[in-house]
Every structure is written in structure tokens, then in C-alpha cells.
Amino acid sequence: MRNVLITGGSSGIGRACVRRFAAAGDCVWFTYRRGRARAEELVEELSGTGAQCGAFEFDQGDWASHQQLLSLLPGHVDVLVNNAAVGSATVEDHVPGPKHEQSAAFLQINSIGPLWLIQQLLPGMVERDFGKVINIGSVGGGVAVFPGFHIADGMSKAALAYLTRHLAAELVHSPVDVFAINPGAVETNMLEASTLSRLTPEERAALSARLPKGRLLAPEEIAKLVWWLTGEHAAPLHGAVLDASMGLGVRPGLIDQDVSVPVQTTPETSVEGIS
Image 1 (spheres, rainbow, N blue to C red):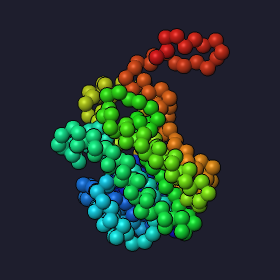
Image 2 (tube, rainbow, N blue to C red):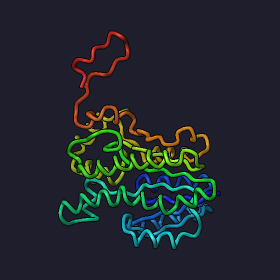
Image 3 (tube, helix red, strand yellow):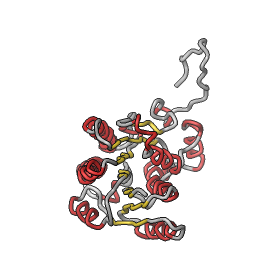
Image 4 (tube, one colour):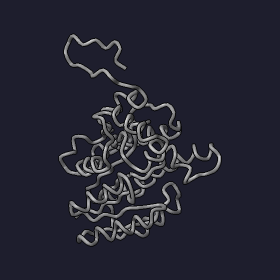
């Protein structure tokens, strides 16, 4: 049985990851910041199935909170999933004040926080000759550019991708594997706050139709990928920064463009007129 720590596990992708690892028989600890009721509900649900699970309040990017979390964990960590983050709309819940403070918060929470956790937990992984680190970023910043979203948001996700590559380079001869996943448009509270809540039902349907495969991603789809990367079969992908957006990363214009002409794959296809 592995000990798995998932940050931001009370909702969205993190919650789906908690369920997936618990279903696989791992001991799962996860953090939350404000979602205490959701966290307690999830612990009760999984404990009822016989899974070993625990939830811890955590303010990522705050050094004192990092120290407290590590002192409360009941054991060593074999798998670290850095999922907790703020987005272009949810940052206001953390820092309601001036814009310059919000810009700093993106980097402190989304980049520095994961770095600190890795630095705190990595030595133990190396010493035990086993460890998996999964950094969950975003297609925005980690893969492509989406004008209109907070620039510091994208910067923080780009930094997370760099952190993954740098760490993987340092650990190339170590037993610890490191990966990054950059999801696209996933149906989560974060996407709801930043984008979906501002749309009418008609606009929301039109957005979904423009997305790759004509739909939003489900949190469970990303959770399955996270879990898969922690298996030994994923070792050849050490250091990979994965685009998990169903193609939005290679065609980001789908977010705000009307694509009415399907892409053809025959040699005669002309790219003229295809947005």
C-alpha cells in the first residue's frame, strides 16, 4: 500500500484523484483550504468503503501551514500530487485586495507552494528508493496562451512546467519519477467561476460545441491519467509535461472561434479558411 498526498482534494480534479487512488487500495491523504464540509463528507464516504483516508486543512504557499501539514501527516509520502491552485477568478477568494497582490498570489500558491512541498518530501522519497511526483498545471500557460485570462495565472502554470523539467533532470538517475499534466477545459468549480458562470445556457452550449470532441473534460478523466502515471509502466515518461486537453493545447483558438469547417486529412486539403 502506498501513501498518497493530494493537495486540493475536496473538489474538482483533486476530489476525483482521491477517489481513484482510494479505489486502487492506496492510503490517501488530501488537503483542503475552505472546503471542510466537502472534505469531511469525502473522508466519511471513503472510510465507509474500507479505504484509508484523511483530510488536512492547508494554506498552500504559507510556510507555517506547510510545516503544520508535515507535522500532522501520519506517515511518509510515496506519491505527491500537486493539484491545489488558484485561477483567474478564484484568486479573489484568497486575495480580495489589490491586483498586484493577486499577481503575487498566483506565483506563491501555484508555483512556490508545490516547490516547497517537493523540497520537503523529496529527500524521503530518494532515501526510500521510491517516489512519484505529479504536478497538475493547466493548458493555459503550461502549453498554450489564452489572452483574456490573468497573465500571472499563465506565468504560474508555465513555472510549474519548468519546475517539472528541472526536477526531472536532477533526478534522471534517481528512483523518483516526475511528471506534469496540463488539463484543458475541465468541468470544475474553477472553470465555472472563471468562464462558465458568465455564459447563458446557449453560450455555454456553443462553447462546449467548439471544444475538442465537442465537450468539456470530466475530472475523472484527468484523475485516471494521474493514477496511471504513478505505475511503473509510466517510467519512460519521466520528465514529461503532458498536454491533457484533447487538442485544445494545439488549437487554443477553439475557445473563442467558430469552427464550422471540419479538418480533413487528405493530401488535397487546403488550410485556407480554416480558423
